[in-house]
Length: 98
Image (cartoon, rainbow, N blue to C red; front, side, top):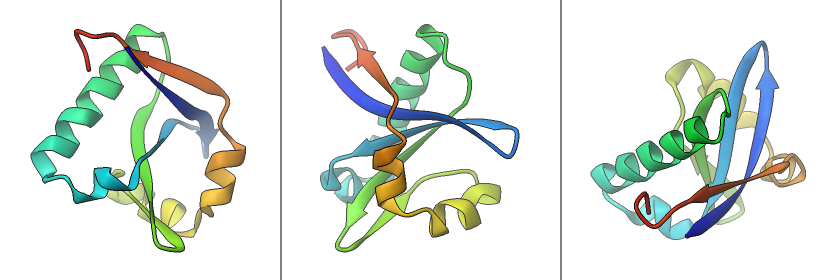
């Protein structure tokens, strides 16, 4: 069982599930990243959380993310410290999901 601290927020009328991940996530190939996102999205749905999963991870003194293109300006200017300060829930992946 894996647990992830998440920021479940509503921004500009849209529910977002922001998931800080280890920097190694950024080194994975796109298929592995997508598989992780699908697992997190399914776990969020199972937990009754509305919104789109957006993984974020540290890259040096900055961060990177995978989000719908329309949200790129928001996430590009979102300080990583605000992500951490917004953590307000824990999302659990069971062994079958992880």
